[in-house]
Image (cartoon, rainbow, N blue to C red; front, side, top):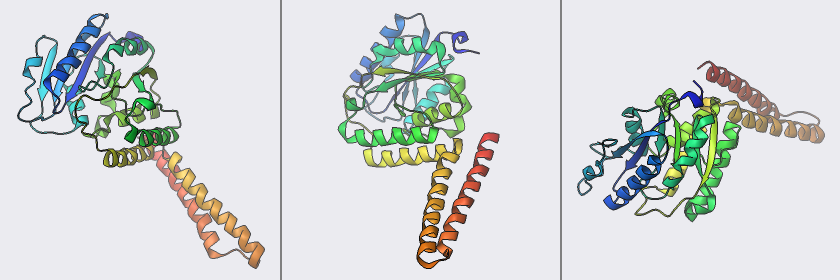
Length: 290
């Protein structure tokens, strides 16, 4: 089924964790009002990710197309999105944050792009991202682009729409943490899905962020490396193999010039590079078969 044949029906998932009720109400109102002006049928699924006592969101269920799901304890951003997807009704999934950082008024632009795409991502300007996260975000996007062999402008944007079928295909790969968006982006690109982009603003968060810059950045890089190994292993194995063989060859030339023979270290490096390359080919075969 092509994108144009998929019905204009959208399930918007809004994960919530310890957000002030007024902030969530504002986000919900924005999404409701802007989608009501489109020709898309929609539902809004709010997922309270175990916010605990003092965070009662039941008053948000004022319309029959607004539902509230609740985790008994905090499971993570990815877990909240997965819960929303599991309970969704429509063939398109939209996600946004409840903290006021994303311009929900831009959802119609994403919906227009959906006509010819499997996923549409709201692309944030790097300058809009908090200063502490700019350098890690830049490096992460470059790292992911190298592994995917395709330019990725915003790997983990939390405002996007995508086909529910696409999400379900890679279900077993999704983590419970913030890395879900990175995972689905890498998976979609690596399997030839069509992605579209819409430049968006990114606002200052209303309230305290639950992101831990150092720990979460490390986790993002580790995840992207694992996904690269899973989907496109030669992009990891070839540079390592080339590095070993290159150093081995250079040392072999140096050894021959200086002592008129090739040393064991040089031969070992060259053979190690060859073995790594062959392992990469085997990993690529396994990846393509699966």
